[in-house]
Amino acid sequence: MEKGQKKDRKAKDMAHIDFNDVNRHSPLCFNGNCPSHGECLRYMAGQQSPESLRYHLCIVPQAVQGNRCELFQPAEPVRVAYGFSHSYDDVLKQDFTPIRKELTAYLSNKRGYYKYLRGEWPLMPEQQQYVEEVFRRYGYEGKVVYDRTEYVFILEAVPY
Image (cartoon, rainbow, N blue to C red; front, top):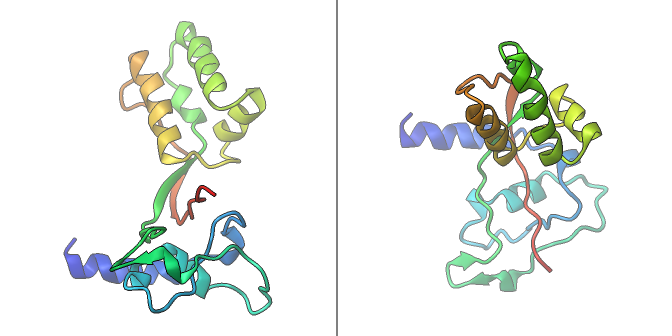
């Protein structure tokens, strides 16, 4: 994909930011004078805010130092995955329980594990890497199969 096509795709994707998905602990930006506002997810999410919004964490103009905002977040979609139960289809019986126990411990607890397994909760990229690494260690390289994947925008929280 050429550079121009990537920018066009990104601009098209920005129209799909759903403000209902914006974390209330992630600050928005409304500073149109920021040199990076056209490429910043915080600014783009702020532009999607509803007319009824009266209060939200915001980034103040002082965050811009020179030509750089300290809280800039690139408008890059993140690939999340849902459900991975079919990954067990070819797993040997002797490996099933150890893999499940390791993933259950990593994914919080039994309830969380099953929510991820069934695709009720999205697996973030770092979680996908961990799941894939566990299967790889047991000899199932490239065997993790997700029910579906999608690209979403995730605003990062900032330290206070």
